[in-house]
Amino acid sequence: MEKKLFTVVSTISMIFLIMAAVFSAIGTAFTGFYPGVAVLALLALIPMLSRLYSKKISAGSDNFQRNYYLIFTAVNLLVIVIGLWMAFVILIDRVFSRIL
Image (tube, rainbow, N blue to C red; front, side, top):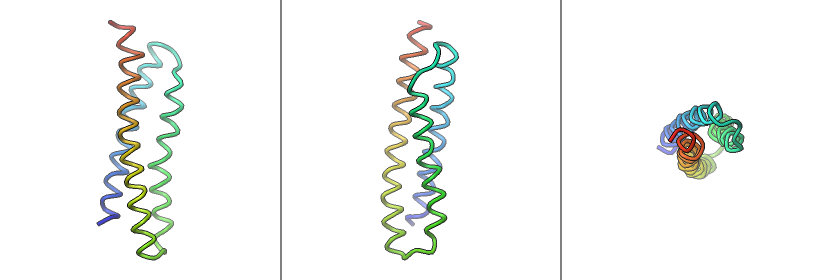
């Protein structure tokens, strides 16, 4: 159960971060470089690296795997929230302030 939940959450996390990166690219096209783009690039590494590491720990004990999936599911949920927040901040602060 933990692995399935982790896979779903990390996939959603990557989707939201890609969406935030698209918003950042739109903001960069309108207003120039914004430092939040670099932060989003670093945030995008978290779900990707956690999925790669989950393949590596498949030989570990069940308790270790359970703890790993619980911790990184929580981290990926936090990344989703941060990615959504940054996407809307970038969109509102950089794009809508110049258009409206």
